[in-house]
Amino acid sequence: MGPAKARSYSGALPPPPRLYDPAVVNQPLGYYFDVITNGHGAMYGYAARIPVRDRWTIAAFLRGLQTSRAADPELLDDTDRAELSRAAAAQPDPAPASNSAEAH
Image (cartoon, rainbow, N blue to C red; front, side, top):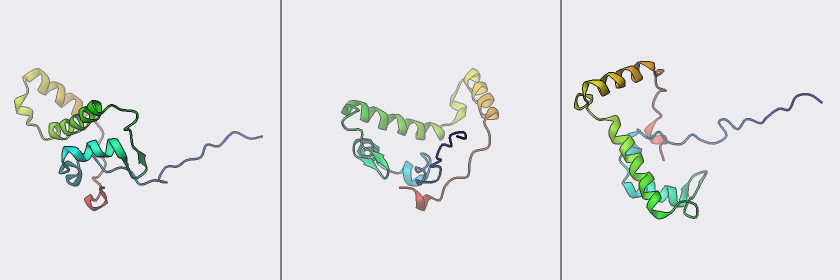
């Protein structure tokens, strides 16, 4: 018998919307809480697995990530700004943004 072949489901499901797409950024905080609670698309809900307070914490964390992306680097001290520059230089070019009409 030959080597086992794993099935690849890459592309079988549409990718989730990008966290920084305007259609996603403009959602109210309760939207993220609802998606975590009840699921969305292929994602199942986590109401039975994640306590309410933690779901709100996760939603707030996602909003913090979105907000920090637009933060002014000049507000950082010199050490943190230098670290940010080093980290940015080490990152590959980002993938092109998806069409916001595809965002859920």
